Image (cartoon, rainbow, N blue to C red; front, side, top):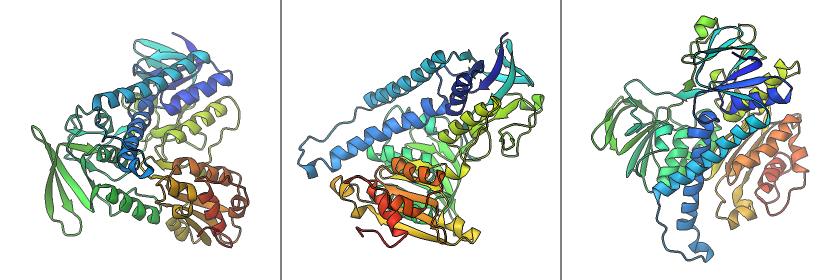
Length: 462
């Protein structure tokens, strides 16, 4: 049995970042992780492997669609699926080994196994019980499903199974038009799979800006994805070589059945707290299974904290990382802080989609006086040269003070461009501050400046 200042349960983005920050602040730290590798869902079966496949298939798309336009003559490429998956695995290995190196560098003990909390100040891993002045729950989340939908990770799969299919399916049904469904749907669409997305709501990517939603769905349709909206899935049925999905249309309650080689269930995620012994430890949990915390990530039990997907808020790796650093600083007696109003979201399709801050609908609901500055990538020279002129940048600013309240981008490198606006919002900048900042030419970032100019007297190139 060992004694620590902090034991973090979970080695994902929230947990390993928290552990590293604790160690940097001079706290004796251990991290409990039951996988064979560190990095959690994100590095092993989530963010990182999916981005590897998105990158590979985007290169395939470039070869098939744009090389000839640029005068590059090549034979139509063949896809070696096993080699592509090996590239994905190599990407995972590099990242997970990198985290393991960081643990050694920062003298963090990796307690290998699954952890539980028998009581405050104690963490059990296997047969050993360790003492800890502070315990941080960073156990992440797991894929959720629907009643009547049975996942076997072979024919009916979650995102985990979708990353490891034995072969590229000829057809795929994606249940859910959120981030995971549309990203992986895009991967297989580029690989030649006929992809049909079945969504309960009437819009894709629920919660995003309405104008982005419409443009995004229209763009994906042009790429070949099919959509059945307003459809409530009743059940799935795995057959010998295919799977059936039964759904009802909300508009007329009519029932329909469709078939595909593979069904991807992408209906969101739920906190993973199974086996932690929260009831025994007396830690309160909400009806949705989230660990309840106060403004400083502390649970109702002194000395036990929780962060990331295990608590309320968007299930994003970078949100968990921010909370991991903040709770480490809080434990160390500093003023840990997370600005929840400036947490960006990104969808890594092509084009990319990103957002930060308020949507128009939220501002309308709040009765806020606001103005919109918008600029199309059609007016951006770099985007036109790179066959990436679809989409736009949209900035929302206070009508009276000009302070930036939110931004929404669909277009090339949207996931990187959004951070200029995040920094501006963090410092309480006005749209004019952004508009008066010199941007290099020719870059995609000029579209951000033009949208900021559109909040004032008007963009130059539109």
